[in-house]
Amino acid sequence: MENILIVSVYHTVLFIAHSAAYIYDCKYIVTNEEENVFTYKGYGGKFKYLTNWNFIIQTVYFGLCVANDFCGTNVRPSGKGQRSRLQRWRDNFLATIVFPVGMFVVLTFWGIYAIDRELVYPKELDKIIPSWLNHIMHTTILPFLLIDKFLVYHQYPSRKAGFITLLSLALTYLAWILWVAFYANIWVYPILKVLSPHQKAVFIMALLVFFVFLYLLGEFINKTLWDKERKHVKKVKSS
Image 1 (cartoon, rainbow, N blue to C red):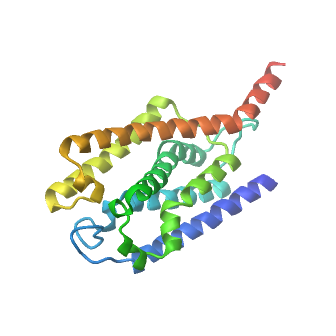
Image 2: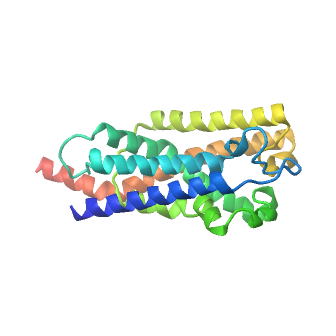
Image 3: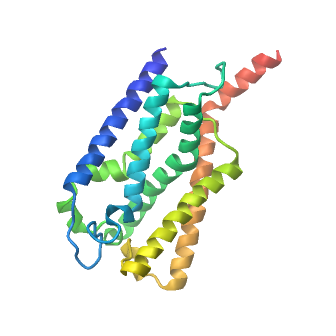
C-alpha cells in the first residue's frame, strides 16, 4: 500500500507539473520569424519540433499513469491477477514511445548542444524560453523516467511489436519535417540545413538506429530492475 501511495503521488505531481509547464509554453512562449530558424509562428508552429511532440507524449503518459493508479492495476511480477486495460496501455506506451523518444530528445539535444548550440538551440532563445522550462523539455525527462522505471513494473511487448510502433512514429515525424522543408522551405533544425544530401541520409539513418538502441536500453533497464523479482516468483511456483 505504501508503494502504491508513493507511485500515485509521484505520477500526480509530474502530471500537474508537465501540464502547467505545457500550458505556460503554449500561452507565453512565442518567437519571431527570423531567418526561418526556430520559427514558432510559421508553418506547423511548435508542432514542427520533436521536443513539442515529446512534451505532449510525456504529459499524456503521466496522465495515463494517474488514471491507471486510481482506476486500473499495478500488477508486479510477484503479484496476482491480470493487468487492466489501462495498465497494458501504460506499459506499451512507456516501452514503445515514451522512454525511447524521451531519452532521444535529452541525449541528442545535449549532445548537439555540447558541439554547437546554434545547431539546436540558438543563444537568442535564452531570452525567450526560461531556463526552468528548457530543462523540463530537455533535461528532467531522463531522471523522471528512470525513477518511474524503478518504482513501477512495466511489461514490455514483443520486440517486433515494439520496433514497429517506435519506427512508425519516427518515420511519421521524419516525413513531417521533410514535408515542412519541401512545402515551406523551413529546415526545422539548423543542423539539417548545413548537411549535404548524403550527409542528411547518413545522419537520419544513424538516428533511426539510435532509436532502436534506446528501445533495447529501456528493455534492458526494465529487465535488470525487475528480473530478480520475476525469477523469485518462478522459483516459488516451481517449488
